[in-house]
Length: 164
Image 1 (tube, rainbow, N blue to C red):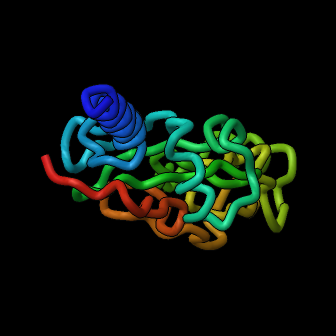
Image 2: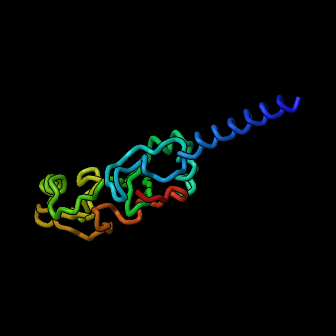
Image 3: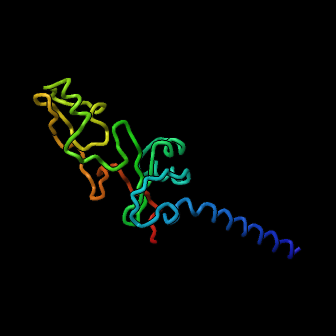
């Protein structure tokens, strides 16, 4: 009887350890998500991290929606997430001071006070206008991080910090 209890206890302990091993990678150190402490490669959000991403963004989205609309990258040893929105770019920002879409819009609308995003694109950091048929920067509307991403679009995901 004592031997049977010991076997059951060992089995239960192994089951608990097995569950811990399966659950641990979900919020473990991000070495499996990133190649280096700073890695600008955009990667899909694993379903196991979706609840943490939802909390970071105060988003009411299902894990599948988080995965479909979000990406991860790594910066200085932290996993960062971005959720795409109607006008939110998760990729590196277009910081060029020229814009082909705005130029085409301005040819057809020579004195337009603004160029719509569907013409200028959603990745740029400038709002455009037209003067005498030429595009001009009306204002800078986004700030950019030193690595070229829109500041404020990315949030750290708690529980994923680690070292390499």
